[in-house]
Image (cartoon, rainbow, N blue to C red; front, side):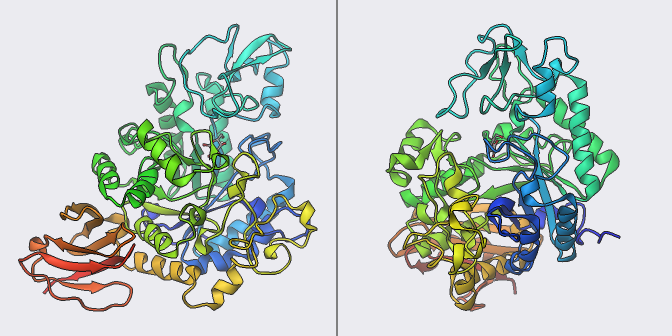
Length: 549
Ligand code: BGC
C-alpha cells in the first residue's frame, strides 16, 4: 500500500517550504545524460535535510521540448527519458515517506502542436476535435492583446496551411491555446487532474491561468469567464479530494491576482509576482520604499489561502509587473549585458544577479523566509549556483545540479557532450568551485547557512501565518517589520545598504519585551518607551523573537 501523505492539516501549504526542480537536470541515474526519477529519488534525503517540505516539479510529460516541457504532447504519462510511471510512483512514495509532498505542473492554457488533440483538430475543419482550439479566418480578432514572448512572436495568431485558418496562441506558435468555451475541454482537463491526484500527487502549480478565455474588446486576461472555468475545477477538486493544493501562476498586479483566490473557491495559493522585482529594486536603491509599497498595496486574502513568494525560478526574472521607469532601472542595474535580457525580463540566477555577494544573498534569502507567504526556493540557489546566459531561451538557469567537484559535477556519468544541458564550469560558479559535497563539509557554507535559516523560519508560525506591519524609521535604508500571531511577535530588521547603518525604531507598543536574536539566541536590551537603537553592518539583518514579561 502506498504510504500516507505527510502529516499536516488541509492547509499544510501555509507552513510549507517549497523547492522547485527540473527532473531533467537534477540527477541522472542511468548515464544517458538526462536526469530521471530514480536519480531524483536518490537525492530526496538531501532535499529533506535542507528543510524542504514540498517539491514542485517542472513538466515531466512527453513533449517535443520546444518550451522545455511546457509544450505537452501527452498529459497522462511520463517523458520516457525521465523513467517510467513506476519510477514516478516510487519517487512519490519515497518523498511522502520522508514527510515531503509533491506538486506537479498543470499546463492547461495550451498544448503542444504535437499533441494528438491538436493533430486531430487541425486535420480538417469538420473534425469533432476542431473546436478544442481557437480558430479564426482572420488574424485581426482580439487586437491589442499583448504578446508574452516578445523576442520570438509577432502575433498571437498562427496560420494553419492545411485547413487555411489561424489558431490562437498566447505563448509560442507551437503552443495552440485550448478552447475553454468548450465544456468537453474543461472535462478533459479535470480528467487529467484526477489522473494525477489518483496517482497521489498533492496538488498542482497551474500554468498561465489568466489567459483561458478570449473576448473581443478586452485584454483577454483575467476575464470573469476564465474565473468560472477555474471555479469549476476547484469545485470538482473539493468534491473528490481533501488536502490538495492549487497554486496559480498569474503574473498580474495584486488587485487582479486577488480574484484568483475567489471566496476560497478558486486557488489555495498564488505567486506574488510584483513583490519579487521590488525586492531586488529595494536592494539596489538601498531604499525600502518599493517593497513596503507593494506589500501594503496587496489586498487581504481568505484565511485558508496563502501567497507563494520567490526570488528566482526557471523563467526570466520577469519585469512585466513594474513601470517602464522601474524596468529601465532593473535592466541597467541587473542586466547591463544585453545577452542577459530576454522577453520582458532577465535570465540570470540569484547568485550572479547579486554578483556572488554572500551578504546580499543572505539578506535576500532572509526576506524570502520572513515576508508573508510560503517561500519557493529554486534548485541550486541554496549553494549559489551560477548560470549560462549564452544557452538560448531560458535554459541558462536550468543547468545541471552541481553535486560534487567530479565528472559533470556528479550530475551524470555520460560524456559531457551528451548532457541534456551543459554543466557550468567557469572559475567562479563552475562545479569544481560550487557544489553540494564541499559545502556540506563547511559549517559556514551557504548550504549550511540556508539550512539554519529554514530551521529558524520553521521555529515560529508567525512567518507562515502571522500578520505583517511595517515600522517606518527615518532611515529609509533600513527595512523593519513586525510579524505577529496571537501573542507571538517577531521583529525583522534589515539593512538594505552596502554601508553600516544606525536606526531608531519606535517600539513603544512593545515596551517591556525582551528581543532574543533568533539565530544565536543572544538577548538584546529590553525595549523601553524611548526609540530602540540598533546598528547594522552592510546588508546585515536580524530576526528577534520578542519575549514578553
Ligand atoms: C512557464 C514558462 C512557459 C510558459 C508557457 C509559463 O508561465 O513558467 O516556462 O514557457 O508558461 O507554458
